[in-house]
Image (cartoon, rainbow, N blue to C red):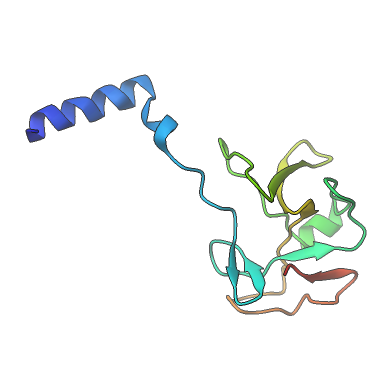
Length: 123
């Protein structure tokens, strides 16, 4: 295939939006050892007061414990689900448990939020 022909296919695909159909949704988190972390390697937490499919951490709580937000066009799959928050935004959950970051964790590998106010490392 010539470079010109391949470039033409790519331009056509971009113009008609067909490339998006082939793009896989990346997993929202990865397992580092026994702890789930976000794409930046920051530890993720669950909240005891949440129920399956429902986040009960809003307003000031969500400032201290930022939700692991869902990127546009992401699709839930397998044990990964999407929780609709009270403000209408969307948050990732694993096995029905909403996932959060902790504002006091400053670098990858920090786990300073484990056991704080009902939050625990997501394992």
